[in-house]
Length: 383
Image (cartoon, rainbow, N blue to C red):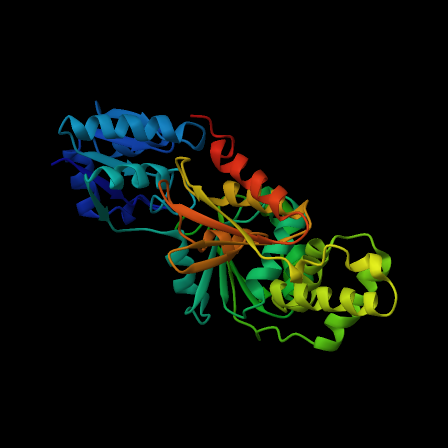
């Protein structure tokens, strides 16, 4: 049976390519690459011209997977490489691996360089447990929400960032994570390698935007887990209800993000506060009280090629945020908050998975219908 080899390639210094990786590239008649141009340079360096190359970019990942499967079905080994480092970590190679694994073809790792492992090795920061965030969101609001959510548990964080966004990210790190240690690893293993050690709130002052070039890996040290102040939670809930600008589900997300208390717990405090207000004479505020309604459920099939990846998770949270209800997703005994991209990604729901959506609240039916349309529509990927 043909094998898909997941080949780690240098993140900078070509001497880091292992002898095994060079041998596998030599023996594999087909190479699937995130960048065909970079693959040609690497193969030329190894003296290996004439390989069949398959482009495996984010935009064509489904077509790339089909071509890789075709080669494997014909009995030809395929070597999968990314632009740099280990394929499958924040690159489109993950889609190829998922599709090939489903068919029963052998998938074998050829271990080697990884920016994630390299950065952790030099950071001098407690490594376990840690959360790998991949590339941070491009927009400030989404980036800060992710940092708040990931940072609330107090674990070490590792993330990738592009140089043109680093100044904005440094500002957000300072605002969200304050005095926690941070190590900025830039151009690892390359001629202009740079490792900066500071704190999140001092990072902006330590960086020179004019010199920020190349790939960047961030390692944020552990911090204290955020403990919610229930008095502060109640104050924010009361202020939010008095303002009347947010639906309960949206208010719960906002207060949870500000205090560190779980969204479900905040939501129940909101319901109790609304009910108490209603008992004092304001009956209208508790019409359709969600705590008296039975949760509604719907089974959803994950049919898109990449499963519940980051963009799919973002579409789910966007659909949920517009409606007044509490929604959770369930798979194999695991539960995820449908308003949290990070929580959804923790479900590990590849193509073919069945996910149960459970919703409670005045607009539970509407949100389940919206989720059904998202899943049926393959999250916009097409068929």
